[in-house]
Length: 356
Image 1 (cartoon, rainbow, N blue to C red):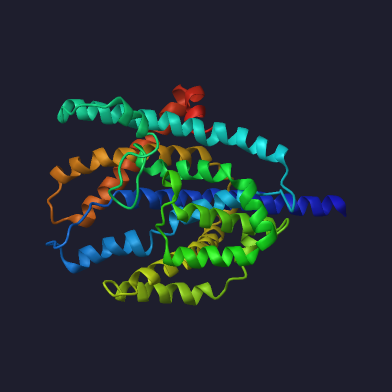
Image 2: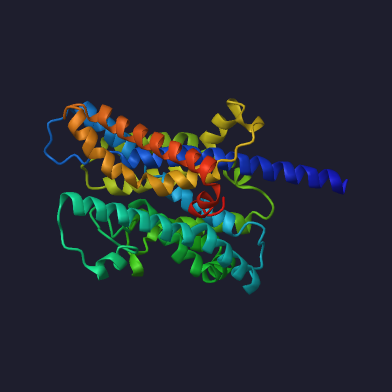
């Protein structure tokens, strides 16, 4: 009987792991498409349909992706910890994150910095300040919401490293305040989604890492799919919020509806992608894509150098075509680079993807 229970638990663990690998593939492709969009200033001369399609993909459907990555990080960080989190566990996790997060962050930031220096030297002839170079590892510009590092997409890893440092505090708060803390965090996120904390730490990461941590700590041995399976109301609420979001653009409460859509979208997409995963029978295929996902995430900063090329190749009016070409080209270049390194320099690749 014990062996039977153990086999069932292992099957559930493998099923969850396999599905999360599938989910990460969809999330990272979505992230690349988000970063491939061309900034459209107002007023613009695009048709409303063209502009609305890009807006819909970018903001209405796209904003749930990074919160989901943070949720998964919090969930797996406390996986199997239970109700106790001792200092020895903390040290082990810190050592593991040195190899899986900090080292790749430094390597990829250095590559992005070198590429930026080369580009600046060849085309802009700009004076370079050494102090600014060092600072760019933490924050380089703030042209969207808040300061990003030189390898812009790595703000997620930068924030995750900072959050992991305070995980014992988060564990204690979640352990004793439980759902009260999570409710407070989610509600405050709806009203303050871009609140910037010290060291450019964005509030988004704290909120969704804590939500994932709460699910892991409170669910015992049950997996994340068991937890989200209870949220059947999402099938009705999320599509309704998407519709409201579209028609409320420009209105006073639009930002509130936007964050409500993001919040429900995180759990909705975990559920709906699992249905797709099962219907396509991918649950019968072992998916081991962690290294590829990490490589795409860290290397797709090259999108900023691909955008100007397509800006000259494709006429200005074809916004959607340009958007898709940039994203697909970025994914192809990064994927080919990954498998080339895997074949020729597997030892070097191991450091770039955090030994995944």
